[in-house]
Every structure is written in structure tokens, then in C-alpha cells.
Length: 347
Image (cartoon, rainbow, N blue to C red):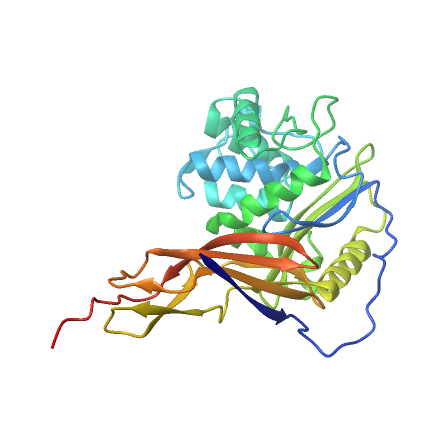
């Protein structure tokens, strides 16, 4: 027979106050704010396929870093020069490290760097696009298709706000790429670049991002911000006021939600019969963090035996822990015994 033990875990994480109930009004045609666990706290036309301009270069950089050596030397070939739009002004015979071309790609949004990196990595821009689409599929980006490595407009080159948020989290998990995206300034040879992402200066906690613009796509922006251990990604597509909109959406999201370890201090005592100890503690099998509203009250419900017979081994499953909010089960995980309990020996 099992018993159920309930604990009330109040997550009133700041002094109670008046919170803005509605998200801010923004200018984007499509937008999403997503937490690290995939929870979406705000969306507007998030699955609408749209042109994405130079936010494409997030996937370009990820595929390059997963398939080449950052310190490899690249000799620029004539076909890689003269790309339309933003440029590093590459010339035939120039030599750069992959790392330097990535700096130009991400900070200066250089289209010629995108072509050079794609061709160096896969042999051609077309072959590289295949790698990009394979990586998108692996990430579950079901509404995305790449045709080129730079994002210049093509009808079959598109993504969605939701898919780009998934991509940004993958980029942030790549240590080298996350470092590049966070740089305010960088260099390639004698060239010096300032990151186009103004949120690195304007938005507290900004870890990085990528801008994009063409006349057809409009202003596109992908960014990532972390405050007090909670991390969000925001994506806006075709947004005439993207800097302000990202700042407003982040302020709203952090005001209302927080990522917390809901298993912290969750421990339950189970009586032991015929053991050298009178009881053993049952604890969660693993740490669990959930994105929850700041004013949420969570209930921890533990299903455990009334007692157990010795011997008990640490790590054995003792029961089940449920985390509930307003009667809805948010998560469930095993409870295990924290320590051994040997059988009592006769005197």
C-alpha cells in the first residue's frame, strides 16, 4: 500500500506586486519568445514561413563549425568573391582562418564570407545547402528550407520564428559559436568589425544574436538573453522596430516567468523495519528545472510506501514524485532512496 505526501512549494520569488498581464504590442509580422526547455511564452504567427535574410548565417556558422576546423586556412578562390550586399571584400588569393571568416560572417554579416565558408566546407554552395537542410531536419525545424548560405532572397529559402528559436538554442549550445555571437568587436586580418547586434549594448543579459535585412524580408532579428539563471530566445521577422520589440518582450517574459529547480529540498522519510536505521530518505532521482510563472504555487505530491523492510540500497526506486500547479501535473519523476539501510544483525 502506498501513501501520498503533499508539500506546497510557493514560488513567490519576489515581493508580490502588480504585473503587466498582457504582452507588449509589437510591430513584427511573426514573433516568438521561447525558453530553454522549449516552452513558448509568447507567439504571433510563429509558424508562418517567411524570408529570413541574414539570420540564415546562424545555420551557416553551425554547420561550418560542426564540419571544419576553426584554425584551418582558407585560400579565397575567384568564384567566392563579389557577393551582393554586406561584404568583407574578399579577393582572390587572400588567406584567412575559418575563425576569421566566421567573425566576418557573424559580426559584419558578410555574404562573401558565407560563400567562402560554404564552398570550403562542402565544395559548393549547393552542396552546403544540403548540409544545412539535413541539420535543420535533425533539429526538428520542420518549416525551414535553405537554398544558400547567406540569406539573400530566394522563393524556396525560408523559415519560421519558431524554427529559428530552436536553431538559436542549438547555436548557444555550441561553445565556439556562442563565443563568437557574444563578441561586440572582432577582427579578420587587418579588418576590424563591430557586431551589428545592438542588443549586446542595449539589453541586459544579452548573450548574442543575429540580424538580417533585405527589402523583401524586412528587418529580422534573433537574440538570446539570460537573467538570474533563466534564458529566453526571441525571434522577430519583418519587424520595423525590432530593437525595441526585443527589449520589451524580454522585460515582459522575465517579469512573468522564471526557471527554477522545483526538486530542491524535496526529501521524504520512509520508515524501515528490521533495519539498522529507523528510516531512510527518498529524494528525486535527478534535478528538475521548470519554467514557471513567478507567482505560481506548486504542489509536490510524493507516492511512497508506508514502510519498507531492510535491506535497502541507495538508488533503488522508492516511489514517484509529481509536480502540480492548479491541479495540473507539470512533471513526474522517480523518487529513490538516498542511502543504504542494512538488515539489523542479532546481538
